[in-house]
Amino acid sequence: MTISIPAKSLKVAIIGAGPGGLATAIALSKVPNTEVTLYEKAKVLREVGAGINVNANTWNVLRLLGVAESLTSGHRVLTILNVSMYDQKNPADKTAICFACPSSPWYSPSIQGLERTEDLGGEGVRLYFLDDVDNSLKKVVRDSAWPTYDLQFTGTTIWRALVPRAQLRNLDPRFDTTAWWHLPTSHVYFSPVSEDLSEIASREVQDPRIHGANKLSWGVPVTNEEVESHFTVSSRTDSGHLHPLTDEQNYLPQIQAALKKVEAGAWREFAAFAGPELSQLRAWDNKVALVGDASHALSGAFGSGAAFAMEDGLILAQALAYFKNDLSKALPLFDSIRLPYYTRMYAVLEMGAKSRKERLEHLSNPTEEDMIRAKVIKSGGGAMDWIYENKIDEVWEDAIKEYERKESNKVERREEDRLWQTIQAFRVFETSNICPTTRHGDKTWSCKR
Image (cartoon, rainbow, N blue to C red; front, side, top):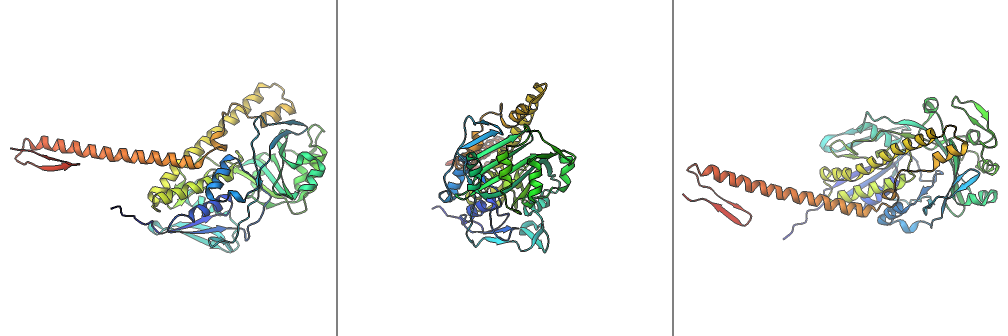
């Protein structure tokens, strides 16, 4: 008769209610004997002017979480080199979406700021909150468990806002689809996020040595004048001064007009930070696990961060369910599945940066068009299906098969070791007056004198 052992009782605190935090909470809420509390700095869940690309990998994990049917259908994607249009050879079907989360028993807006976390050994982890502390919640957790981890401003700043979709469509019909309009060191992105709203995301590369000191976390309010100064009429030098742009260097008049459609106070600044690859995604004797952006500081390089975060949450929940909330087994398995995935991404980024540098060095005097194409067109990186068409359910199934195969091999090796030790024991006893009897499997071993 097989005895079913119930899962251990487990309390989980999820820090941050972005797509990754919400998905992790949904996944963990299905794990038996698991109590989930989700902490979020914002007082209410709302749109922040950032769309989410839904590729095949994203759709797959949303389906597994049981929320895919709540999303709208997708549309085609274009990459545009400002004046001329460059259609992607294999444009992916994507959807820019806004999440709406109903009230939930496991959602807890943080009235206070998270100050620090503490490792309590066998008793778990304690969170400390204080009034008037406006820290990034995820950063506090990571800094507590990984105190030497160093995040650096990459030089890329993104300004995002939501505007009425009809206003953009009236300026240029092409603004009614997801598309990027590029210049050598910046781009402007349009994407519908609902029947009535579109997202504008304006991105510029700046010298991190000059601009890094005043960059804060994501979602910082900025003025319309600040944003427009980077993309209309003139642009900033690395020293922060303005200089005029030529017609060839500037954005099309309708793009400049689109930026002026943003209501005062609607722009939010998102400074991109990146950090080195982590050696593991768990800490404090398997009581802390990193999911989403906290686990891989890639600064949105692949445009699929929400999917990565949701995949993290799903795999973490699957591991806990499989091991009945035994953290000593579940978190190492989670680590072994997700860490190599991010290691591969870091390698792709390194190879891409090298390739772009080599392409520009090959051109003795690159034109604006050459510089844009070196920035936009990715060559030599190989197929990216392992990211954008990742089937996380199959990844889990393969990982469990491999884990069980290794565990079976361990059992076989232990049986072989026992048998070898028994044989060795008989060889020793042949020279002694002691005659043992032992069993191995269904066989009895004995000696006669």
